[in-house]
Every structure is written in C-alpha cells, then in structure tokens.
Image (cartoon, rainbow, N blue to C red):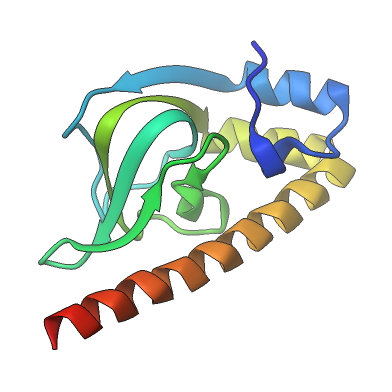
Length: 146
C-alpha cells in the first residue's frame, strides 16, 4: 500500500517507508464518528488520507484544530510519551485514515534511527505549525465572542 503522506514521508528511505506502511491499518469513519476522546489511553497514531476531522478540548468541546489535508497527523500524544490523548477527534466528513499501533511504530523508528530522527523532526515541525494555527483559531473565537 502506498499513500502520499505529504511532508511526513519526504526524504524517508524506501525500505523504511515500506515497513512504515506495513504497520498501517486503513480505517474509514463517517461524519460525526468519534475516533477518541481527550483522556482516552493512547494506543494509536493517525494520518489522514482524505476527509476532515475536528479536534476539540475542554468541557465545552472548544475547537482547536481541523485535520483536512492528506498527510495531516493526529493522535501524536501516543508518540511523545503521553499516556492519554490531549484532545477529542471527531470526523466532520466521511474520512479515510491510516491508523498506526504506537508500539509497533516506535519499534520501527528505533530499528531505523536515521529515519526515526527525520520522522520526529518532521513531526515537531508539523506540531509547531499546528500550534500556530490553534492560536489563530482560539484568538478568532475570542474576538467573535467578545
């Protein structure tokens, strides 16, 4: 199975990418379907193939990010030492998603340290961009609600 993962896969070796994709399980979710709740145990890391999801936090389910581009990642808490998800993920459109088992993926990244380093570097870049986008969303909501 080969699926374009956007920035996440750029520069990765073919052997690593083949093994990476072998750890993936393709899932579908319908509009309104919950993938995980904030506070659920982290078992999986996800990458969007197509569709759209909304990530929310807090009791009022405050919108903090929209996953909408092929290769967008979510569920990253599972890879950085988090034992619980930091947000709730709900499909806002029918979506196709790659689901990676956290333990298998971490074993693969350890097996291929150069690709593992590049993977975590790209992950941190993506999360930095997401943080800035989340600030924009939160600030926009605050201005509208004032």
